[in-house]
Length: 294
Image 1 (cartoon, rainbow, N blue to C red):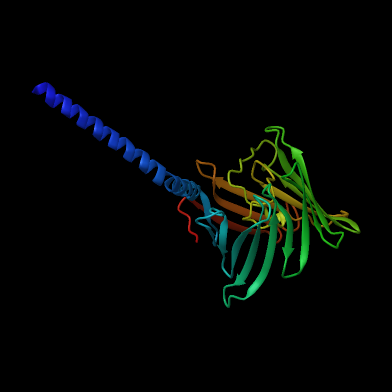
Image 2 (cartoon, one colour):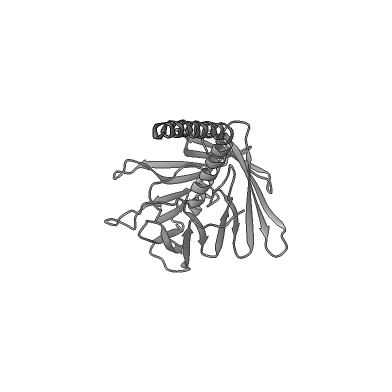
């Protein structure tokens, strides 16, 4: 009697296991594809939204796209009198896209400036069309991502970017930008990455385009200019005949993670060592993984 019960129980257990296996296979066949797609999408967005972003610099508030193909890309920059929006459209070639930035006056929402950027599959800008002035600039690169020249279409106006190889890291660093036209070079901007002999460089963990590049500060589409932060810059008029050479100093305070907390910017319009007309400003930085956006 006992053996008969055990035999029946064994058959029942086999049936239950088989039913469970069949149900498991059925669920896997029907549900897994949709669930996998959802998880990949959600995981990707979760990863992007968990990344640290600059959300405030001085009075500027920076926002980002929260989802989709361009999640994590800047969507809006608000400052005291203006705000700028950024929209993105995929290009014809995989990985390529375009950006349109529109700057508006806060008082009346009047469009002040509109610029379109064309980005290739390497992620760098190849053309900038200022729709407000109808000027088009073309960008050329060495090794696909190192910006070497910006030329104004239909003009001899150009800016050449010259790099040096850093002795401490072996990496390229922007050394000079030389502006020229059909009369030759008329301005040279030189960059320094320490505060003088014996001082140290500071790693650039969150690259922003320096003001002297004349590029949108918050768009990382022009390649990398340096592995460390610019701490000094000097502008020399060319040909040089003892004119004033505006000089800039940037004192960054970094937190324990290497991100800037504050920037003390000092500008000497006459030149290094001359305090006449000296201008100073201090900006505080705020970084967060809880960044705002659309």
